[in-house]
Length: 373
Image (cartoon, rainbow, N blue to C red; front, side, top):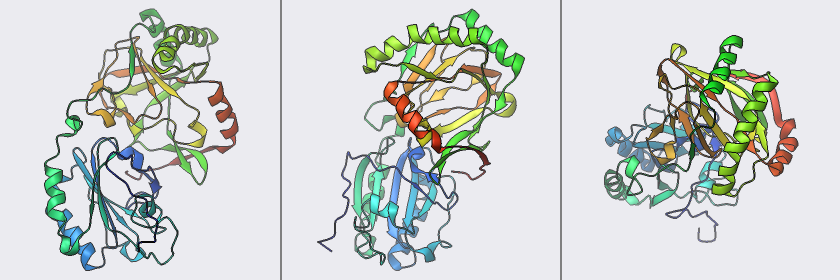
């Protein structure tokens, strides 16, 4: 055992991101789980006494796991467990790690592949809302670690105060990017042409595929064709947003992806669940996302950055929120009215080369995906 090479996650380390089969989703993207404390139990199997003790401990503390403050993720590597673990929403999910990839990435299996599964280290790993390691609790004989684990969890501060104070999401907020008259022109263009229901991008078998799932996203988009509107938006963004990104991030923006007006409407439950904007090959070139509200006469529809707490942002009409495409973000459900918004991505010449190289990975297939996360 001592000669085996394990990855050792320590407090302060970022947990690896991975996509794996779960009990309800064959491609669960773990990075979207950020925004609450995560309790991982790498148990190998629930078919023995150790695994049964783990299940009993989670059941005794069921009320803790509400997907607001805490979420539990069990990791099983034994295929015979497929029918023995079930998710319970909110709060409890399992990864079916039959190839050992998740266990290896999290330090439960040695880095060297071993088809026998020898050397499995059973661990509890506690992550903060940014998916960084807080504590690691190795399994002890007769479950002696469980009291210490759950006492530790119950002593953690509320999610919004996990750092000891409320964090500010690392965003830029700029007033007066679009003046009122230009906002109205963009809204009129959307209302004249109408918007089409849009999906989101997902990586499947090496290809970037468009997905449609109303549980995850409801938004309608209009891609602007009017050259005057395109030029008007471009020049305003170039003179008012580019310099701020250069000042704050020392990044020279030179390109804009898409000139698009989108609408989140209360009539059809407009929203967008937690996601990142650059996690597929065909979107990897995106560097900054821009969200420019075109109106303010709606309720709900705020931007939220779950890794940095529950605070939400509703820009004034014409104001912009600018943020890294790597940040987890969501659009809360619109409760009344319509939120009109202009949504470009910004990047530079180096990223343009990445985009050109990855064009071949973009599929024109659009799939329905009704599996919950």
